[in-house]
Image (tube, rainbow, N blue to C red; front, side, top):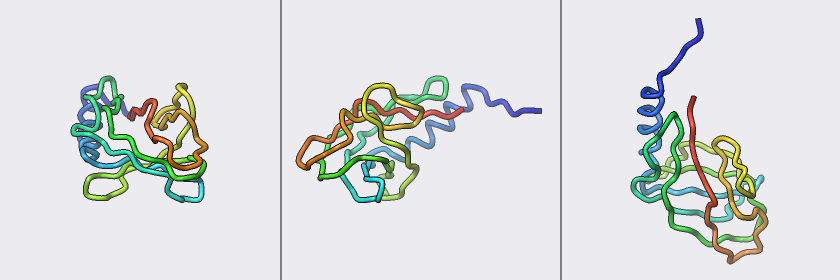
Length: 121
C-alpha cells in the first residue's frame, strides 16, 4: 500500500522545517563551491505553506562576487546548512530551485532572488 500524507500534515511538516531558516541566510555558490554571495532571510523566512508549498518572504539582498552561480545553500540562523539546491536564471523555476535574474556575475552586482519556494509532497 502506498503512503499518503494529507495536505495538513505536509504543511505542518514544511512549516516546522522552514522555521529553522528564520533570520538565516541563502548562500549562492559556483559549481566548485566558491561563494558568490549571501542574502538574509527575514523572520519569518517563508509564508505559511499551502498544499505543501511555501514561498520565501522578502529577503535582504547581497552583493555578488565574480563567478557563475550554480547552486545555493539554505542556512539556519545557527549556521547549519539545512538543504541545498540548484540556481537557475529566469522565472521558470523547477521545484525547490532558486531563480536569479542572471547566473554570471562580474562582481559588485546586487544579488537578489526573482523567486524561491520550497515544496514537499
